[in-house]
Length: 216
Image (cartoon, rainbow, N blue to C red; front, side):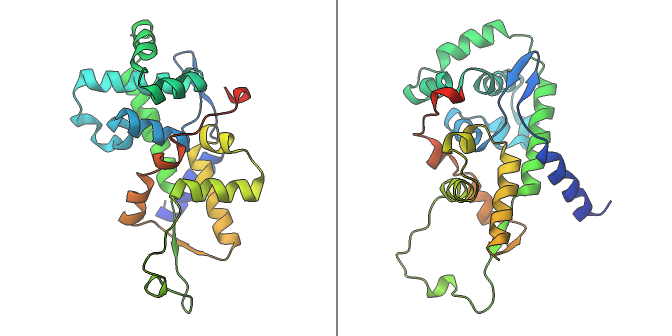
């Protein structure tokens, strides 16, 4: 199978993403907000999944449980605990009652979702004849990636901010964003290192947001 066909298969698989279940626990999907929480809680296992083998076994187990807790506990509870720094208390109770979580299965799920996300990432390429960055004012400010994505999808779909941040699977959100870019006649290409670095800053937009009560 050629790379383009393989990528299209991953994109189509991502459309079916949604809430899941592991070990009898119902999980919210990996979303834009997930990356915010992973960075704030230091989940290197998720942010750098390719380096999982380098993480000591006890730390790998802790991060696996933390990942499952933040996707299975009520969202308002998770956000409140992370915001005020008290997350280790509810997480500790969860970890004590869930000591049988199987690390390889969670790692496999993280790798699977990461593949879907990687396939959906794109970068905008300036078209010939249009203003280049060199012609822009030196003090121009750009919006954050997450803010741009949420704004664009909300404008195009009318979906709520809370849904876009916490409930829409990331690999689907990126594809819908890609559709909006192409509909505006932007040229999109495979992302390079600068875009990957920008993705790592997704938490800057989501940090202070609180979901609607009916989104728990």
